[in-house]
Length: 173
Image (tube, rainbow, N blue to C red; front, side, top):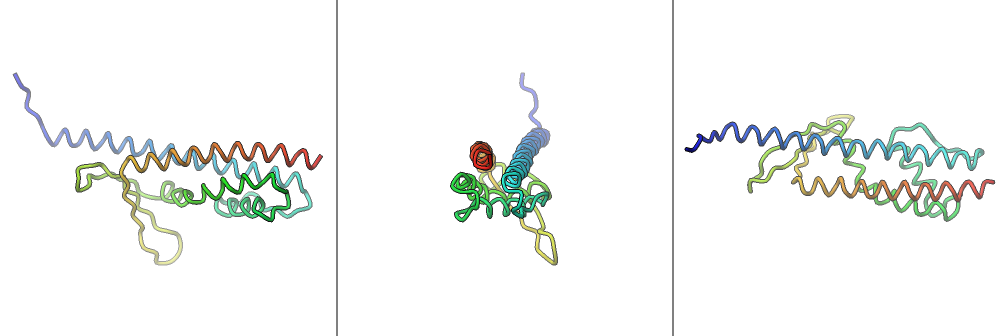
């Protein structure tokens, strides 16, 4: 005997599962960006302690803090070559940081594309003025690649900040 198949119920259950998965992905990404903020703050504190007479902006929102760390670790760094690897990681993460605002302030949705695949959508309006709403649609596979890349780059940044900390502390002593 066969039970009747109810398409509407099947679609709803599938939608709910996909939306739940999208929200989990979003949460994991936001966690990575929160860890990034801590790592940047720790790196700035380390550099400030190594050169107390140098003016280093700390306690800023993520983007200004990110830019300050880039400035301090760049090619003309007052801290020497030990910071260049950190600058390299920041360059890689810079390509991903735009996603932070979309994930933390955007509206997440899911829908089926023309080929039947599920897409994650993010709608976000940049602050200030009459800016239009920006919408991104990503296949789940691409979204997972973003999370994987962010996780790998953050792990690399943490390791490089640890190496920089050791070199800067030795130099200051």
